[in-house]
Length: 385
Image 1 (cartoon, one colour):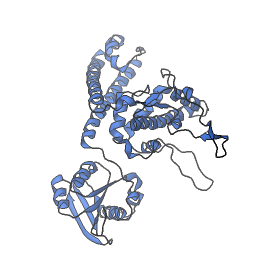
Image 2 (cartoon, rainbow, N blue to C red):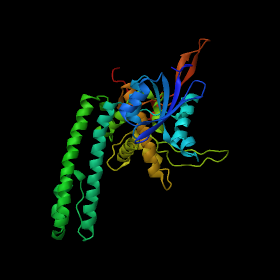
Image 3 (cartoon, rainbow, N blue to C red):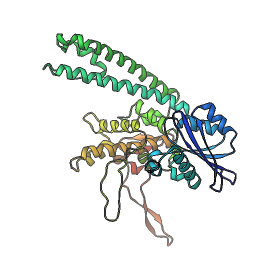
Image 4 (cartoon, rainbow, N blue to C red):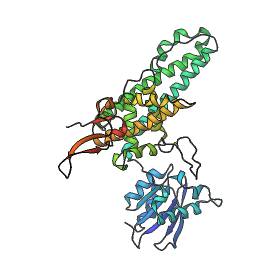
C-alpha cells in the first residue's frame, strides 16, 4: 500500500555489488548507496528501511533477492528487462542511472515495468529436476548425432530406432575400426539413458504426489508428464491470467506486431516468456500433426490450417496449434473439466437458435453465442456434472 511515507527504490543488481537509488514520496532523492550483493548485506540494508516499493530487473539474482525483500515487508516489482528500452538503449547507461530509472518508473506507474512473476522456491526446485533431465536429453542427442555422423562417413547405414535403445542396437552395425573411438561414447549414451529414465520416474512421482492436476492436462494425446508438469510449474497459478487466451502471449506464441497507418507486416512470434515450456508445447504440436498423431479436433484444425499452402504453412500451423494447446491446458487446469477430443462433432452449431417466449406471448428466436470453451475447438466436459 503506497502512502506519503512510502519510499521508492531502484535496485540495479550486480554479481558483486548492487546500486541503490531511493526517492521519497515527492520524487526527491532520499539516498544513494552501493551494497554487496549478498543476503546478509541486503538484509542489513533493507531491514531498517521503512515500507518501500522496490523495483529491480529480472536476472540471475532477482529471484532470491525479491523473496528476501518481500519477507522484509517491502513491495517488490521485478521488471521485464526486455521491455525497458529506456534503460538498455540509454546512451549514458550506468549502474547509477539504471537504478534511478527503475526508482522513477516504480514511483510513476508499476505497469511501465511489465512486472514478471517469480515462482516459489519449491516449484523452482521441482522445475530444476525437469531442466536437469532436459540437459541430459540434449547431451545424449549430441552424442548420438556424433556416432551417426562418424559411421556415416564409412558408408555403413545405421538402423533406425528410438534414442532409448540406441546403445543396444547400434554396436553390431559399427565397423570394427571405429570401436576404439565410439565404444566409450556408446557407454556414455547408455549411462545417460539410465539417468534419464530415473528422472522420468521422479517426474511421474511429482505428478502423482504433488501436482495431481497434471492428470487433467495429460488427457490430450501428445502432452506427456514432462510437458504437463513443466506447464504447471512454470505458470504456477492459473488465476494469474484473467483469460485463458492470455497464456499464448505470456509464452511468446503470438506474432510480433509493428503496425503503423496502412502498414501492418506479418512478423515472427515474439518468443518472450519461458523458452523451455514453449519448446515443449511446440513438440507436442508437432506430434499431434505428425504421422503418429491421433485423430482429434486439434489435429484436424492444424491440418486444415497447414493445407492453406504457402512456404511456411506447416511451421505456422505447428506454432498456432502450440498456442491453442497452451490455452486449452490452462482452461482444463482452471476449470477441472475433462478434455473431449471430438467436441466439434458432438457440439451443436456455434450459434443456436432457441425458441423463447416474447413479451407479446409469441415465440421468438434467441441467439446463443458460443461459450468460451467453444472458442478452443475442444469440449470441456464437467468432471462432476
